[in-house]
Image (cartoon, rainbow, N blue to C red; front, side, top):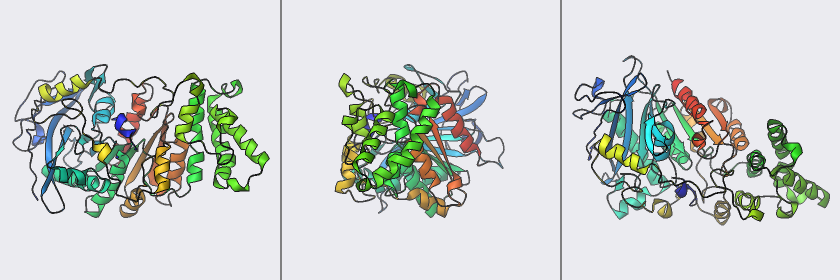
Amino acid sequence: MPSKSARLLASSLSFLALVACQSIGTAERQTGSLPGDLCGKGIVGAASKLGGLDYTTCAGTIEIDDANGVKAADLFYTAYFAKAASPQKPRPIVFIWNGGPGADSRLLQFHALGPRTLQGDVLGDNPASPLPVADLVFLDPAGTGFSRSVSEGAARQLYSTNGDLAATAQFIQRFLKSHEREGAPVYLVGESFGTWRAAGVAEALIERGQPVAGIALVSGGIPMGEERDRALMRALTLPNRTATALALGKLDAALTADRARTLADAETWARTVWYPALAHPDRLDDTSRTNVVAGLARFMGLAPSMIDPKTLWVSPREFRTKLLGAEGKTLGIFDMRQTATASDEKAGSAAIIEFYRRVLNYRAGQYAGIDIPELPVGNDWQYDQSPITKESLARAMAGEGPPSASQPWVLRALEKAPTMRVFVATGLYDSLNGCAANGQAARDFPEPLAHRIEAHCYGGGHMMYEEASEAPQFAKDLSSFFSKSH
């Protein structure tokens, strides 16, 4: 959940919990007659409906082993299956998770992509769900939801970037094998820190011989290792800040008449003026520095005195605390337009646990974050994919992401899988990402890889799907992405 993202943004198959399904909406309960026995052999299931689409809901766990073949965890999933239109044309299957690290899949499942999402405090049909074009499997990583490691030692391994990637890849392979879906187009969707999981697992699956049709990276940028041009990526966060200042009424009146023009001008100025200044501040004379400060004040809404004339850099944390600091307000990390206390993340918990306990009749375990307090997954996380340096930790403390760099998982996966595609989604008011920055990062990939990456910018925050005006387009774009494998 978002609160975890704010903390330093991180061999046999056995089903140990009963997989149970029950009708939702207008459909009547059926048992033992589901097409293809979608929940698994011998498992009772039930048909449900989303509009005219018949689908099946399943919930259960898959056992995960450590490197020595010893059981390490039971990972919980919620799966939604619909019948393929033709046996010769298998439906795509999409594995979906949130970030943290330490977040369960509630946000993407019950706020955005599942066939039933929260409408206030109750679950209702979600006509924007991509379920009509692809089967959906929502995964809760170890220590979240109903997923649990078997020991403290296993938890230490699983609560790490590399351990998490290995466990997730193993989960997907075992899930596909148990449902005889190895030949289906496979997609991975991750939000925030979950983009690392999607990118890293894609590479791992490809290396193991499991094709991956595509990955969707939501609000986490493009994991590419150390920034190749940090000054440019920093400069291209300006349009997000300009949009925020516009929304909060902090820009000069002359900039408010034509919002699209102002955002375009901000990006142009960032590329032609701020970027060179950030890249080589030592080359500027006093007059040039004064002009850069004036431009930053104009496009960010900050007083010139708030901007360091030596570095000419305004960190995400500085912008959030300074823009409305005189009013005693701090901008939200996930949506910079918001200054009030975030809405209760527990809202809808009763409906969600009822969905599992009563609707699906899932009785095993306790849901971390609902039945019991959240487990300290994020606090205990080991960023072991690359070293934590003094500089990388300082950037993390300033709001620029995790405490150490990712690996270039996306580049390596694209090189190893000639047909894999990448979908990138960014919110315009997110302090952790930049629409222009992510678009540039996509274009910076070498040809012919760059043309397999599509970048989208939405008028929302980190969870852009919670913006009523953007949610349908976000889901529509993902549905189109999944459909391209047909």
